[in-house]
Each structure stands twice: as C-alpha cells, then as structure tokens.
Length: 163
Image (cartoon, rainbow, N blue to C red):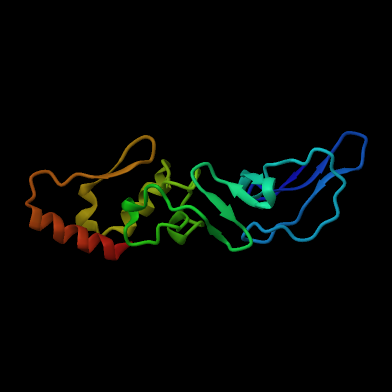
C-alpha cells in the first residue's frame, strides 16, 4: 500500500493478486479518472476520510461535516463557527491547512509542541503574550485577570489584527 504525505492511499495491493485499488487525487480531493478492478473498494481516501458513494453523493465524511471534492467545499456549516466569527461558517482550518489541523471538520487544533506554541506567540504581539494560555491538549485560552471590559476589548481588537 502506498500512502502519500496527505494520508491519501494511492495504490493498494492484494497479496498475490491484481491491483485492488489505484487512485489519483487532485489537491481538493476529487479523484482523477482511473481504471480499477475492485470488489470491495477501500472507503478511506482523501485525508483518510471515508468516501461516501452511496446515493451517488461522492462526498467525504469528516465526522462533523461532509466535503464535496467537486466543489472544493463543505456542505454543512461548522458547528463551532461562532468561535471563528471573522471567517465563513463553511471554512476549513481558517483557510490555512498548512498551519492548522481540523480533524473532524469542526474545530481547530493548534498543536502541543514547543514550535506550535512559539508560532502562536509570534502571531500575537509580545506585550499580549501573557494573556495567552495553551493547555496540554493544545487548546488555546485567554486570561485577562482583573482588566476592565474596555481594556480587554482593546487587546482583543489588537490581537485580531495579528491573526
């Protein structure tokens, strides 16, 4: 079995047999035309998400949402879209899949390693670093202590421009 960097299966072989699966994917997950001889096709394809071919949908199941590679878009709104009000409710990884991960298509995972934390702090101006907390699961939170609502509002406006 050959798996690409995006966790996409390109070629699957059955022991002592013909190609069980051969598939090329464009960057948005839509399959190029390929000849296959498959009795029980492997369902987990683009980004290791289950391919939904029942009812001729041709979507990928991301758990929380369904992705249509023909459109390059999700059909369902992000159920946590209020967390990212500056982006469309149909976005994926804040439109930046290089830096962010969206495992189930519903919430952003920033990461837990020291490089991810450093990158987060670089995004926010140095004077505001003290308000940012990252827990062991990689969840980001803000703690403003005893600041007034006006001070908090000013800081948040400044942080928004940093992202």
